[in-house]
Image (tube, rainbow, N blue to C red; front, side):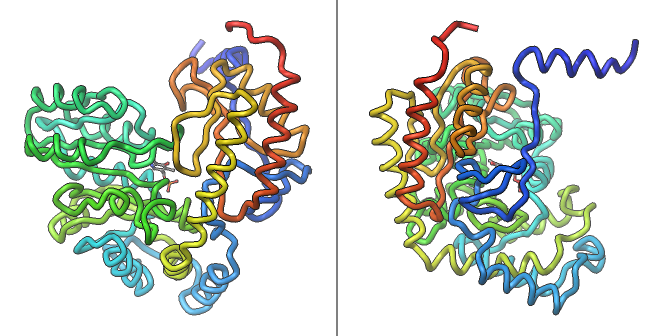
Length: 391
Ligand SMILES: *Cc1c(COP(=O)(O)O)cnc(C)c1O
């Protein structure tokens, strides 16, 4: 029978891989109302606590009064309004790149950039742990597509040696499910030595890394020649919505001409750009948010070590606890929830088989007391888990 959806869904259930959406009944924040329960949240990507910041909200409201709600048309028709343009100029200055292009989401920015730059007869090389949107973009481009071992320069080099046509090397800056940093100085040098271009998607680095929150390229001091294509998303550290590509004049003009996910979609509501202009200001100026994050990260890591859980090697607000089996990850997540803590279990295919985890994320809006509460709940939740069986 065609389209046997029930059996597909039943299989997913049986494999402990069924997805459900927690219903959020409050704004983003450290304390959230979810499915009728009040919880302390440790799984949002609002790392700096800007998603519901009063000044960002005010900029959004003022923006809506001045510019209305809808974007109205695509950028190339009559949807490119002054706030969009102003934000692009601010993002170019922020990233130290000649230009930036604003898109409606990170997923679209990645599809747009990769497919505009490479196609049939070219090569795209990606870290095997890249975000799904980057992998999809590589496949959609029609270029020869190959994945190198995670953060492994030798593995990249062996693929670069076989590459044909224009070659694009694509990596997450901060890996979204692991929290570790791409070894950009070495990866960029390998790409440059072979005339390949580097594209870095720093969705989780902007706002968190670098003195000014300029992300992984600021952290490592990498310029336009090292990373010709730089992607940032605005729904995480920035607390708003959308994404940008930063790079040369010629790159941005090429995207305006050829990036289909840029061309064939309505511009984001201009009021969102107004809000992002404000959050960009806060993100750059209020470095106490990054300092607070660093304190919470070390507090959390020290605490978890004493519980005997396996943390991943991460210096960022993404602090996953490796569990292994999906069933066990779900049990741990449920046990935390009974104790008032919201931490979602991340399972395959989002992460490789056998590496299900609890993806704990910290925010500058958390207090040390919040982290203590999480640590206490973790300790109790782990104690009540059944003995590990190898499923
Ligand atoms: C979240 C994420 C995206 C997608 O960005 P959206 O704006 O949410 O579509 C892209 N890349 C990475 C690495 C991400 O974590």
